[in-house]
Length: 226
Image 1 (cartoon, one colour):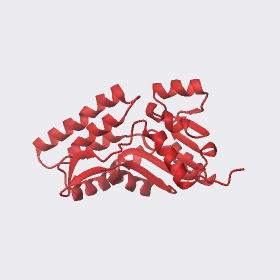
Image 2 (cartoon, rainbow, N blue to C red; image 1 turned 45 degrees about the horizontal axis):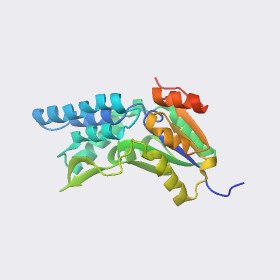
Image 3 (tube, rainbow, N blue to C red; image 1 turned 60 degrees about the vertical axis):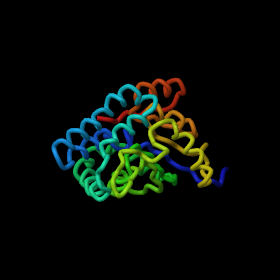
């Protein structure tokens, strides 16, 4: 028996919450001061939706980059205030109860609980604190700021593509995690390498690409999305 730790890796979008970065960026853009500025940034956020539709089952990082252009020139303080409002007022009914139960079971089983998200830290760190107790580590996207204003860019590496598998391998090495006895829950095509890295993968509310891969790999599939 290995004396290493084990971990449970959760992709937030689709497993723990039913909304993703496009919803958050669009809402944030709608709160901007000035009608013209709101219209421009709202349009930029909305452009991410078809990008996710076309590429989301293969590489969601491009969609994330496009969506977060909506934050350009917003002050850091304003983003933090809006992030709090978004988490408190908009996310509560988007939390997936079945995902919360999976998280609780992982904690009860003694796993180190790790959440990966395409969302920005200003939103996701508060969301984890408010809705997902018992998370040991959170990795998410981070906005680039210059002069206390967002540039509209994300700091590399951008979460959402195939980097999940490489990240898990590095995380396991750093924290002495036995991946063969660890679990992962995810539902998007780019999460294939993340799921493949652990001994107990579980596909949750999958898109077409991942559902097909799960069927071929004989991985368990759980559907509980509304």
